[in-house]
Image (cartoon, one colour):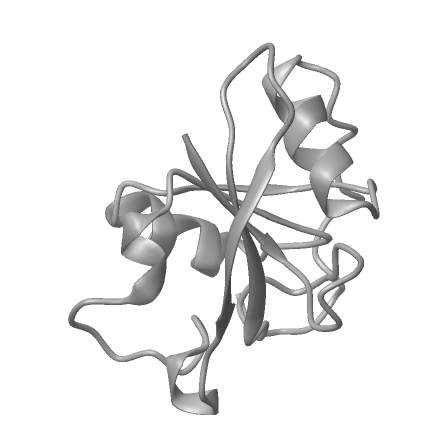
Length: 116
């Protein structure tokens, strides 16, 4: 499976999947350690909030993990065949491992903006 973890600083899981420009990419399967296989650094117009359609780099991903994700972003990703999850875990590699073994702590919800 391919995972994209929202990480504006490329070190920690960051909130707001819809406004995130940077993602760490991982390949992983259950029972093995995730392997970082790339990074995305979108221009502002390619954030999920600003994106207006067509192919998107996250289309190649199975799961997006972020500190928070609004219902609108979750729905848009679902339409593209991508699962979006939020978590309180701050370490990107641990977040992927935890998801695979069923122990990913849920996020605290969206950060309260009105973006949907």
